[in-house]
Image (cartoon, rainbow, N blue to C red; front, side, top):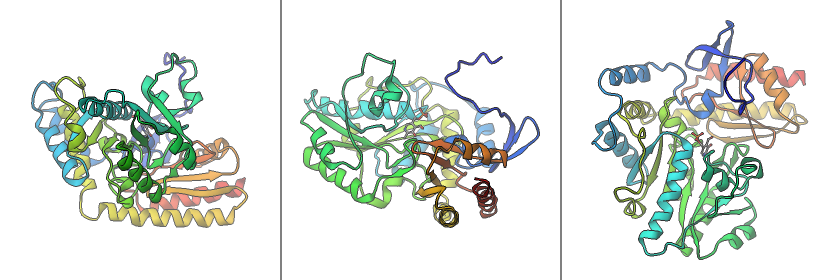
Length: 387
Ligand SMILES: Cc1ncc(COP(=O)(O)O)c(C=O)c1O
């Protein structure tokens, strides 16, 4: 009998070790892991470079406090700002803390400008930004907020794809629009570049900040470092997490100089966020992701994967509705509930995970090999045949 609370519907499977794209279960089976901790293990399991980095840092110093200078964090922040739109970074421990911090930065910016009433955050209805009490009310989803009242105010919502509802939801109290460039939990729905550009235009016109939540789609997963990059849009605030830690809990909020100016001492903090151990692992992840050709290779392997999946879709048009996503953030949308399909994939030793709208989410490590994609394609084809 487990003493863990029942807030998860856990699958009846446990693992004793992992290597690259593979996981080995406690009952001696080998699985191709295309969940990777839900887009977290960007370099797969037991990556030698990450193992070296964690061991090296573990022998030096794990944790101090943000009351002191942390050179490893200074280095990681510098690298993130040099390669992106951002001028400043605040480190956290998870995605939901990063989105909360993003909300705080937006509100504090307008407060510092003498506009404390400009504090409302406009989000997509039924989106996902994490599980803290503020983040669930940001989602505008009944399922996430039910039973967790009183309602946290300060959030408005618009229906994705409905421009009328977007325009109607904006008022002079709107401080920021927050959206995921690819809605991960929401079913791997890619927000088109034209819409991101439209949002930027609206934000400029109405003097609203743009928060792009890259917790799931960022850090190379889309084939660019950030999923929004291909739109040419420059956001004001970007929360990140998942892939930046490669399996170690790291979150961060990246921001422009303009908004960072409001984050004066005492406005935000975290005991663990940005500690030396986490930061040296974050740096080790970036060593690989910033390596010449790494992102280009994701584009190449993901193109191959999408093409192969589309071939399967064309062969099974009554089963698969759409192949969605960007890069290695892939969704296979089925016409019917995906639960049995995911179970059959697991029975055939391929691990995937659900997302909304009957989507089977496929999240290989970013350094996945073509031969491993071929194994997945074979298994998916076999399961399609069985249906
Ligand atoms: C877009 C997005 N934002 C925020 C979060 C929350 O991250 P975490 O679970 O690390 O708190 C997630 C997690 O799936 C996410 O996909």
